[in-house]
Image (cartoon, rainbow, N blue to C red; front, side, top):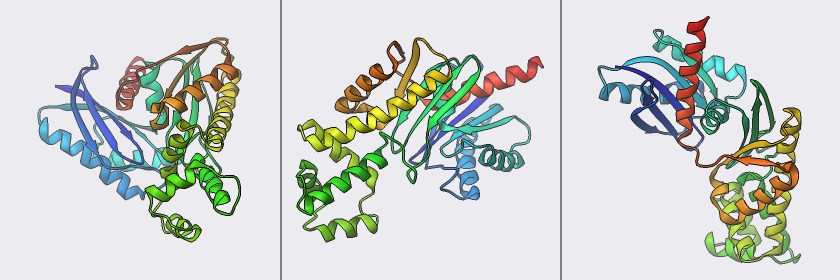
Length: 301
């Protein structure tokens, strides 16, 4: 049986799908986190091998025809080439394609076609395509700042909380974080942030909770971040010369109703006419689409 393997690898988990040539799912395997920038190359390789070997042990008659892995932090050729070269040492008999997790999600959202994908999770990124031309905006990482990403909004929330603790404008986020993380003082908060007991991205759900309660500061943080993200989407849409922009938004934050409503409103204001794409399946399926499409292109040549 001929199969194609697609892997969606993020900083929280990885998913492998095996499909036949008609895109029927033969097997699904879940594994640990994989990240091209935050993990050693050896760990990336071992995590990928484990997924593949777990599949192979359950399907001994399967003939792997190709593999595509979309890995977080893998948007640059340097990281892609390093991982692909190492994997080819173990699997020299079939083609291996390494790309970013955003690209495989885009392939699934738009079925290898045109549109703009927005990812809002711990970070954020905008990835667009039209007539085989690609453009991206954002995705700079937490040190520079990803607007409307959990880390960035968590940082801004923490600053607002600290300001309130210093006697500044009050926010419901202070009461929520005190209760949720057993914080009795400003010093407790500082210690728990800097010893990594509380990660900034973990504060984002508290921000959303406060916003839903009507907290003005929380709502301002969300609206400001969504406006900035929508501006990035507008830049990509303009670069790609869309008149009606196909848009798909994915990510854990977009599952929150309040955040989704604000971002949707900001996108409409920034773009005007939008063709919404909903209900994206497993991004790993996009990796399968890419490797099958890539193999067909090579065969034609």
